[in-house]
Image 1 (cartoon, rainbow, N blue to C red):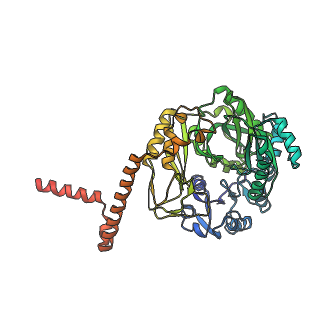
Image 2 (spheres, helix red, strand yellow):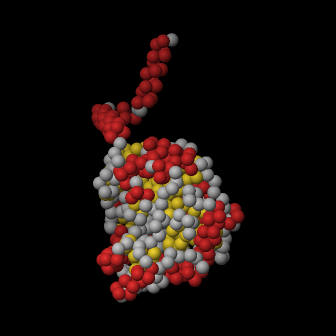
Length: 507
């Protein structure tokens, strides 16, 4: 049964909230923003058709507060809630609460979220469905003596992982027997602190792994397709930094095999909505199921760019009960796309967050360039949330051209007032291992010296440009205070008028 959606509350903030709202507007659907105390002036609040305050700055009192978000949705009479990613997007209790309140949750069922959110249960499910998994345990191991025995049976090195984990938390690589118990206790402690669950499992460590994920879509009628892969091996502390599609590692045969297993994984849990099946792939093209993300991914725009499908629109149509309009044979990749995540962080100071006021921003433009952001001049980046400012996505016909276009776009991207990762990303684009496509998940560690090396000449030039821009800004501000009308006249117009006067006098 199809139930049309007319109003969507977006239970998120920042660039992803804005991204969802744009698709809603194209579908003729009203959007509702929720915001915390420090997000009153955020761009997603300005863009939405309605906005409602839900609490204090801390996530626990606002974006993670299920009661407040549900009450907000009921107050504005929203038909559906889109969770974005992060926060409550993979919270089974939130999905169940929406279901109970008669609000459409734009995502999978609570049961699927719970099944695939628990890594041990997910592994067991994949093994039953014939999807290859990394050799390791199938259950939560509590007894330390049993864990020691299991590690010896699997063979070092191994990965200890939190069952309820994600984002690299509750994860330890063990390559020496004397470090097993110490690593185990640290992983369990971090897992409990991060997820309220200290259950862990053990996997064989794959050397030189490539992190490749497949985008899947499933409707409520049993149809499931994949929209090819994304290469996500450029990671720092298990967090993705740069993604691209197609993967430089991929062959057409490997894509077909992995795509079939990605679809099988989704069908094994009767999945509907947009999701991602993540794999580890070794240099011999052996691949293993890693986990399933039951939500939209940060890097979804590069898939949209090479396939032409709006994934947020597809999520909404699936949530309404509509069948997928495309079949697997309709999906193909055109060209190449790369995404860089722009963070407000100090890359020279151990990547510490750099909150503060944006004093100037110039976003890149031109053919094949897309910026998914949410900041503007005068906006203050708060300290309470993830420091990502935007996602820069570029497309071109070939990988080589795409890299050059990304280099150009990063050069054009100017932000002052806070420190950003832009220069660091420029270094990645210049790194030989990235340019030749031979990198794996050790890329950043292996190229640490190259990526963190300073370019003093370039820095001096950019420092001079920043100082010049500040002086110009200060002079404009001063002239505005003396004569307010002068602030309305650009230097270009003034220059043009002077040229006209000169021509008039010449005639």
